[in-house]
Length: 102
Picture 1 (cartoon, rainbow, N blue to C red):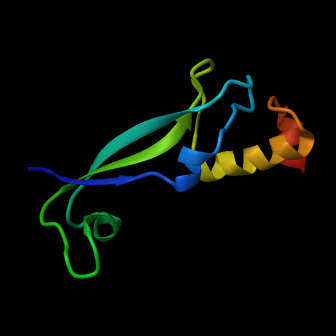
Picture 2: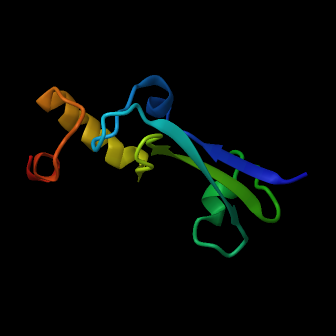
Picture 3: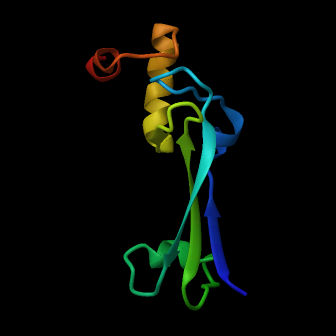
């Protein structure tokens, strides 16, 4: 049996996010990696709760966003900033100037 750790932010499940380049609705995109004892973030992913810790390597799955049309991949936190700007300007497609100058 493998040790597994999956993390997905609640907002990613509840809210709708759109690509700032083409306007398509973004999809959740899993990224899996192996974390071994001695890695900097091993302790974070190997704990089940305060008392129980997994032994050995851990398969970590984290989710980002991916646009099905233009293949743009973006982290959740960065996409939250883009989403706020999209709501403020009331449009899904943003230019680089609109995105970075506000």
